[in-house]
Image (tube, rainbow over all chains, first blue to last red; front, side, top):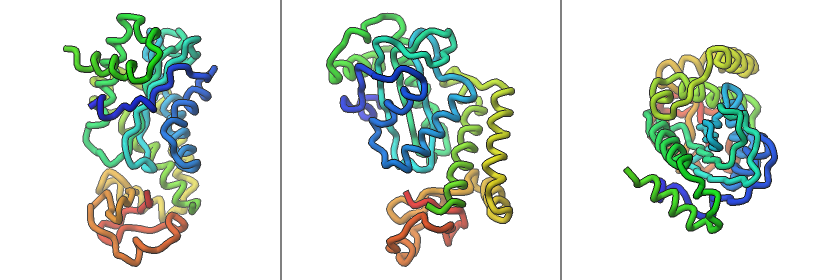
Length: 151
Length: 114
């Protein structure tokens, strides 16, 4: 799943954002959506954040949403070396983001399963700081895929 | 884009969000949950968006949502993503899309041309 969903051009290894709003915008900009769709999806992401941060702690956040204006699933991964205040559960700055945006057609739970898998990878990532050292997007993707496939 | 259609899209996205975060699968799979206080605030904002719709459109939206779990669906490749029927050629080939509120002739859901 991750292999197909994530491409190296959707990985930002040196995010410029310094706050939550900027982070969401920077991540979503990688989806290359037209302006009107970008605004709708950004609004939906902010609404999701308004009911509790998706910063799950230990430097990782999984902002996510579904919107009718999307025609496919977008996964964007972003890394911030300085860390960004994302109101994470442990109040620590977030260094790694997984942005998942999906269309609403899937009325079942595929989207939630996908989100769950990403949460699993995120939790595995917290066991090492290796993800802070990789400087090549292709290698970064390979690293994530390996973690995903690990039992 | 038509302003009523824009409102329907916002309402749909908030409804999807509420449905997602209140589902047991969300808590189990993702491990995140929203507090009742925050959910209340979200429902209040949902009502605000709903209040901007003409009453008749809102009534139809709610009725469709009850029936199909969605009041609006995207049209992709000329197919309604709610009932998967192909829309009439006259609708599909019309150049101006999303400039008026339209419904699928088969199932009646409001449509958004994706």
